[in-house]
Length: 375
Image (cartoon, rainbow, N blue to C red; front, side, top):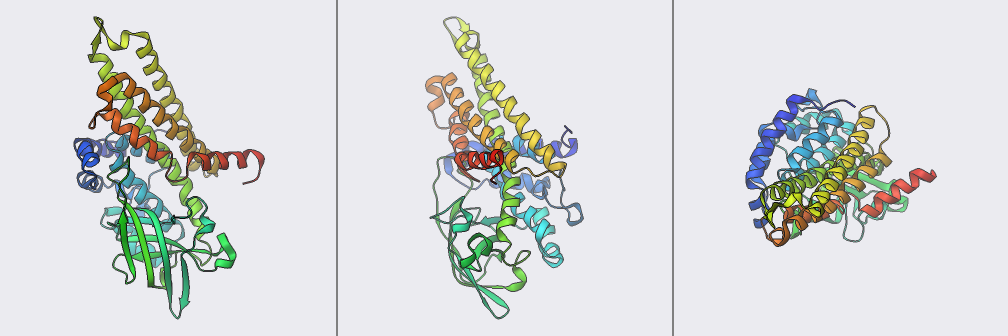
């Protein structure tokens, strides 16, 4: 397995140092991580998946997962921005026209074009074929109608990749992705959600009402939206695994520090076997989750299909993060229940990673189908 790019990791560590200083405030105030975002932009990390010819870092997957883990260990909300940028940027780089790439990718790489990805609707999440938002051809334009839910970074996005039905009768084969610019008439962000974890990632509803979008803004081909999304989701799930790893690492580090400093019955807390063994278990779980994630990243770098491998990484890492954060709270005792405690925040952040970008149940479904040759 190759090692992460050392120069890129130096950038990641600098950005993480900035993000860490504001992580508690971002969570408690439920606000956008402006400082972390500025640090990511300054270090060029928002161009993680943008090709070098457009000013991006063009990182291999092995480096990308290491970057996300490093930043997530400092601030889960800041690290989530890397996922929000990487998925749509990767899709645009893979399927966009030359004109679309020249227009958007340099600004995405510099951090001047904020991204969002609108797939989910209130009645369907992982069942992309069930979306109801539509687009109807009107001369040189398409007219978009519908409502999207749980759209990350919707309120800040300069460009949103919106998946809608251009041929509802074809179900999943009738899905098309559009590049929708901020300020497009008929597009507005509505309710913003208050979440238990990753509270600086602003999610909300996106309303489409007779929104006219030029046909030149179709990503790739009409009716090819689902394969594009699945391609992006594999990569996003891999990065979500790394995101969960960083959260687990933060929780574990907080437990190690506390157990090294706290004394009970005249001894350091970690010398009590129950505590020491719990921390040892957590270290082992994190190591195993990292190996699974790095293996999936290495497979992607080799050009292999990582559908099942990414699902395994996302499943194991996200559930590991929750498990580790739970154990870290136990180590802290009552202090672990307080707002502002890293373990308490990590527990809430970890639970989010088990849900978004495909629940644990969906990951198990993907893995099952790969085993039995049905997916």
